[in-house]
Length: 112
Length: 110
Image 1 (cartoon, each protein chain N blue to C red):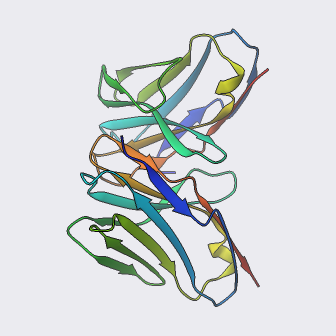
Image 2 (spheres, each protein chain N blue to C red; image 1 turned 30 degrees about the vertical axis):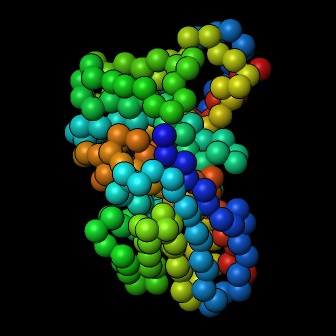
């Protein structure tokens, strides 16, 4: 999977608790993305990063924050998890806009 | 923002037949159109892409066509095989705004 590792792969958490998902890459790609995948919606962009400490919002950013302190790591934080954030989360990397995106294996998050 | 619609949501074909998946997009500024294949339990993987200055692109059994005037693009898989069974996503991008279709579950029956 192009040197992308997501952790954890599965997580069950309670409503109202903070959750952090980690994406680690070994490809030195400049761009990193967090998507969520839900039935009937395909993949929707949450946040993306175009460099260390450079991030921006995507289509569905409410309730999520991100940080990128190193080229290789991109963290997604749910400040206070809600049941509507139950989803499969994918990290992706690319060398630039409109280039091939390489996806991680995904993290299945369940908020109960 | 961009809106991408994908049809059909499910498609079942006999091995050896062709499969066609269609997508429409709304933003005329979109200029990059990738197709991803997702197998069970894995992340999506790019299978082919096309840019707005090209009308058609082929890679072995897979082809993609783009009609910019009508704002639609299609994926064609010929001589389907059981290993083509997966979920396929189209996407349209104008740079930092890539939107995906809802996906098509393709089943190839042996």
